[in-house]
Length: 116
Image 1: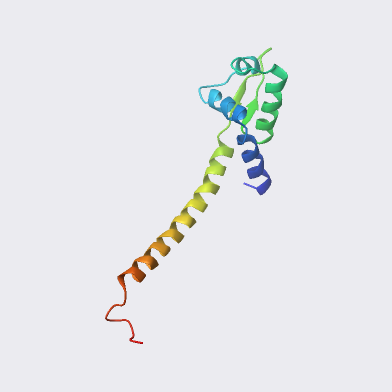
Image 2: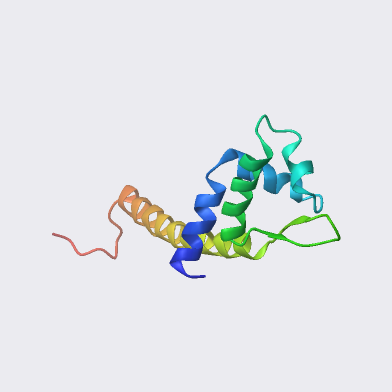
């Protein structure tokens, strides 16, 4: 995933309305009108949120006769999760090394340590 793609994913996820839209789409595709129903905003406002999600690759819009169903896409979320997991692993390894060093320091000198 490119840095620009990752940025677009996090920008899209930064908004609570867009996260709520994705949560609604987790149960299956919906039309724009169905997605707009629980929100106190206009259909054009929901469409703007969908454009941000679509730009990030988090949703796609299909065509089914007169309907344009919106579907969630998982790949950008998987890529963002993988990116975060890499940092979590690196930080955990760093903390483990720090914990080990602190344990050594708290234990004091051992018989193998040179005497000053």
